[in-house]
Length: 167
Image (cartoon, rainbow, N blue to C red):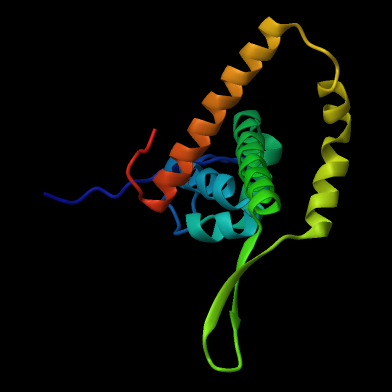
């Protein structure tokens, strides 16, 4: 029995069936691209890892509203992840290893003033709004939502580190 090769329909003035190339578009590759884009916020890296050319991705983004919406969603996810990382870095600093003259190592935390100032500037308006007096019921609701969010962030961080769930 002869093995059937998958063919894809190529559009244009005359339609024809053709064997897909290594870089042909597929839903699996599009999904892989969008997953990497959401992780890295880097379209070049996402196209490299998914096996799609960046020009093909750009063409698809311009012509396919569904793909364009998924692209924007992936960028929003990547932005949120980056924002969380930057907030954590601003609050917790970064660990630095200092090697002393005697060869011993010491660990210290560094905090970036520039990062802190940028975050303060970015959230200034929100902080001003937050200083307005709220009814006690709103305060309790907000407190519960913040606690839930912190728990989700801890679970996500623990999952990324491979640690057991410590709720």
